[in-house]
Length: 77
View (tube, rainbow, N blue to C red):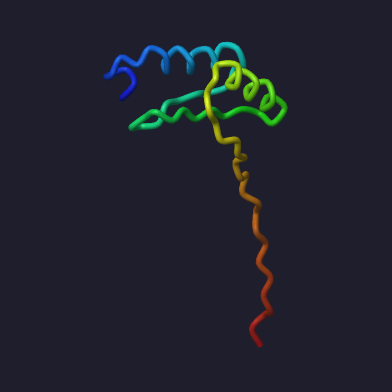
């Protein structure tokens, strides 16, 4: 919404390119100028190379897919 309100066409176009080229959701942070891109691990290198080719800086991280915890306890006596 902020990018649209500020008419930041470069950021909007970049998000659209990512979505079209890599079929990954891309969104601009609420207050900008950060852009979050979610992609499958096998797409990460291609997306990173695309970002580098645009001369942009980025932080690469992973998401945590919560592991189901199993708690063990002793029965009451």
